[in-house]
View 1 (cartoon, rainbow, N blue to C red):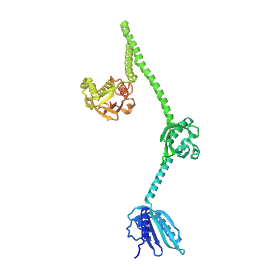
View 2 (cartoon, rainbow, N blue to C red):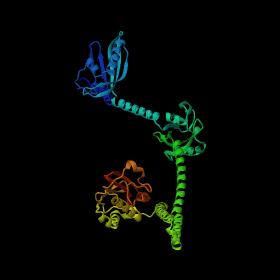
View 3 (cartoon, one colour):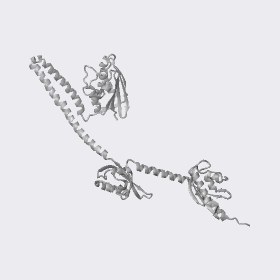
View 4 (cartoon, rainbow, N blue to C red):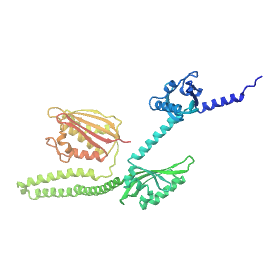
Length: 495
């Protein structure tokens, strides 16, 4: 009775288990008989049936054309002829067409200086190789991003020494890479900002904070002060121990200088505005008083010395004083808008206010045979000063009627739409229009007129623009001569 060799069977099973778990197969080639044997795992890696019988030519054809096939062919031949072992990572194309990275190992068995057998291992390393290549590619991308970033970037150790610096950082401070790597960040930090930086470093190392942002000063190689926006974070290992800092240093020196200039300009502008307000106050009060005195003196002369009124100069003086009175009154209107700093706006229903303006000039509308198409949502509420809104609406309506075409009645269309946080009131007429190329820049100027009309003073649009801007709005215009004009009045919505 024979006893089965259970020890040999268990060894084979263990070998198969190891091969499958490690995705490592074996192969063997006899150069004398030209027989090539693949293990089960080697066949699985090639994705061929388990009863597949390979040969050398077929085996080599699995390797990807080009570098992989040329390399394995050369190494395999060299192993047989010159007894040189090989260990190479190349690519194959499996039976199902998959591109796969493998590790091929070949060892020559030599007898009497002749290769009688080549034995080898065949390992599937596709996932690890591709993961490794992806990681290498990402690291390359990060390296290129680091080197080519327009913002200064650096890796700094826990003592403040530069481990890595990019080109932008070197250019910011005027050092070469070799020069700056011999320094610490403390060496180029402005002395007055060192304490703040040191405190932040200690807080990050201790774990109180994980990043730090500040605006600080550095000293360049040329001993110039560099203002920069610093953003620093700390990098830790898997156990939470601090490794190093990553810093971004953005040069804001020019922005700082520009901000200072803007601040100075704003201060100057504010001072000039105060002077203008004082001037407006003088115009609206003192000058008006002087006109009143002149007008009163003329009345006294008329009463006490009536014979002087027959003098040919007196009517001219009277006319000049009247004109002065009109000018003062006009200037007073403009000054009144600009002097008021804290205008009390309130929510106003746009349609109700428009209907009020419409009613106040209803006689003019009927007399001029004007047709007005009104399309205003009754729920629209704007933020405005009541007197200003009335004045704005009346001005645009009367202008549209006043500057109609001489041969036909005025036609006006009113529409509204929402844009951003504004209600846009569109007032379109089909009247004489305005040459915007010629008059566009002067359209809202004081005492500017663009049509020959007896009662045109050139103040309506000027005052209206001031009123609209005073309540936080703006005016835009489109116009074409003999086609008409559309004004777009932006009024703040009430929220």
